[in-house]
Length: 158
Image 1 (cartoon, rainbow, N blue to C red):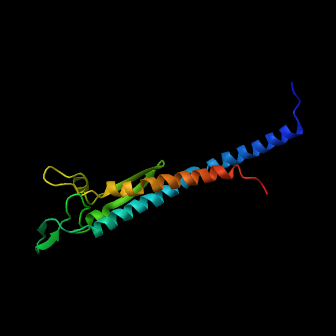
Image 2: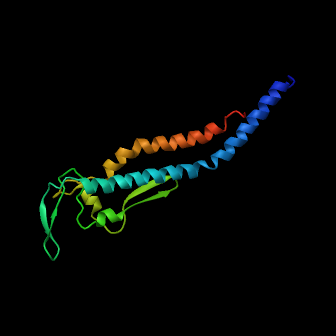
Image 3: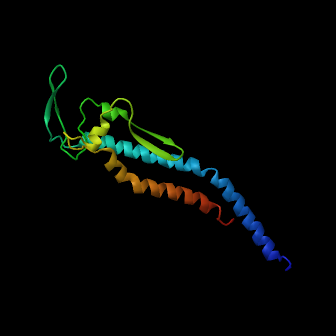
């Protein structure tokens, strides 16, 4: 057996310290990822709401409610135009086990019909385009945050 040198002992000590730092830092990665996912999901939510507020109202005109209020719909393939605001108020997100769920909760069961369309109505997508807009940014930020934690385990002491 080859005797362990001072240099090898020093290397093993430093690797042990790095290993300890990595195991400690890995414990905070899920919280960091959850934080980045929440920021990203909120960006998606804000994009959805902004897209509905700014959608061109160039679609059909409808008389709505008891007073005959006129609603002007959005054009097909644009986000839905805000009418009473139920859909906007229902856009929520939740993060479970580092998974993002975002969509209409409760008050607007018709949201899927707007997103996907029906046999009588062309789609007014709002969720898909917002996710597409932020997907790469969210993935990048989650990865950067996790790698930053890992990188710190390899920093040299000054």
